[in-house]
Image 1 (tube, rainbow, N blue to C red):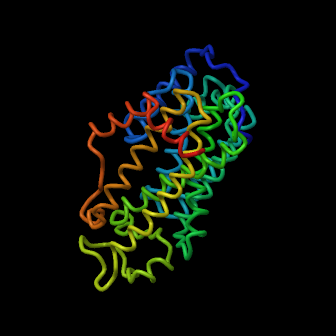
Image 2: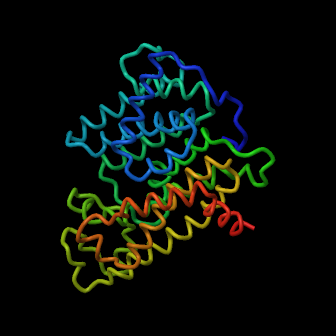
Image 3: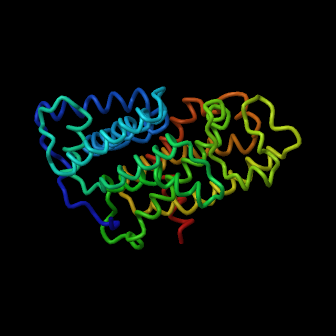
Length: 315
């Protein structure tokens, strides 16, 4: 997908069934997208509905991977979801279908140039979880992050588009993908303990060995004899580099789209700063930003402060 301006209507007329489907997706987003919701609220109605449809479908895929079903049942459910995605791609979902997420996403796909193939990649990434894949190197982990998060960045860009004549717009999908990687690596650091208790390991094996943390993170204290602080800060440095590169997307977006991205990314960037400042906190419980700080980040995004800073950094 090229980083081009939209070629679709921004103020669509919606039938009652489609509007109801979008409202369902907005409800899912407001209830479950704790960090993303702050950014999505900054969009105009059509873009907000489209992002919520994308989120609701992605959430469905994630919930299958995170659920309690046995692996073969999860794989079956993901196969069914991929088939549904094929129906959406083929325009075979009716407005009065009983699945509101499918209805909303099908409508979004007719109004915005969203790369639906990216949702196939998301399913591929969740299958990596289902199969218990571990990651030897950063490049291995990067592939996973690309599937489960970079794809969301590129899908969102299909809704946002880029401003006319923006220099560097052709690289917008690359920047959107990279920003998704930054958010996902931050998530991985935040959820180290929770993932370990679920039997999952995401950090590269070569890094765990380098910092003496192969024993894992099932306890509130770091692995004995390892440099846990060094491990976390090494990953935080990697995530910061991804944020820096991904922020090059912001000057390519219009004001509201840029505000949305700046708010969502800004929340995760500040979360990363908290983790970096106190690495062992991720073993004691989930590190989070207070609601007031999230709201402040959203205000900064809407005011353009983070977008202007990104524009200066990109020069």
